[in-house]
Length: 60
Image (cartoon, rainbow, N blue to C red; front, side):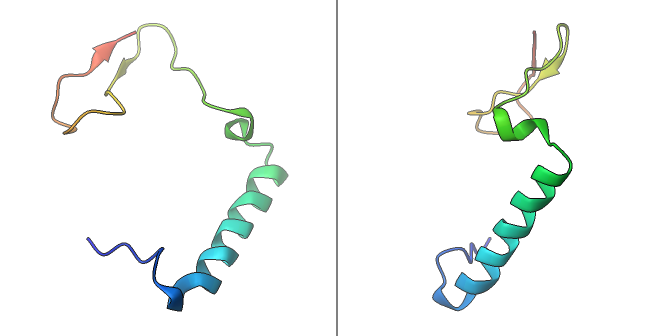
């Protein structure tokens, strides 16, 4: 993987994409703007800090 976010050549494009995403989230009233969205009871979720997506999910 080659993360380009620290590459000075991509600074302008990155800022434009972040701005477009922010405006779209505001326009669509995206609930992620106010924080995390809890998974519903009984949902099977992977640990966000897990080392691999193949780790067994946990049930909430």
